[in-house]
Length: 237
Image (cartoon, rainbow, N blue to C red):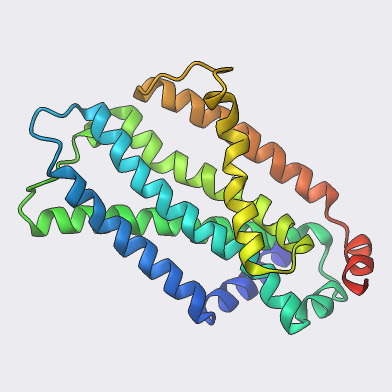
């Protein structure tokens, strides 16, 4: 556990010291904190809690996606460019701590983006006297569950994908694009009609649970597949 915390502390320090990552984080949470207020004007007073849940979660998840898809690959690519990844791989730190530390750091940053975006939405709503947007979906148990669960699941899923992609793809833009496109793997069964879609809180809770199982399985596979011996040979090519 100490090794894992060591890697996470190092990764967090690099994130804070990266001006570009901080700029993406700030723009994403502020922008996605303001946009719901504009869309809320078109809802009217008769909008259901389910509709508000879907719209609110869209903005929160989009903020998470933007931040994690940038952060997860960048934590690896920044070290590849600076040649510090080679030094990290020569330390006594175990493989699982190196991989897990990067993934968990990106996951925490993505989840923090969701929390800050929600807080800003509530703050802006309160500043406007509640006009244009009311958070009725928070009164729904499923809404509260999704607010806490979905951003965490999305963050973990994209963090694992983004970390592995960046270990193989050296270009930041390409790594970002591939990480974002990984969402298609999750959406494909829905878009192809293999799984019937029901935009209700109860269905979304079940979908979030299934996605969480997939994300945890992917993270477990990542811990087993990450081997510094193979990575060192690849980086030397």
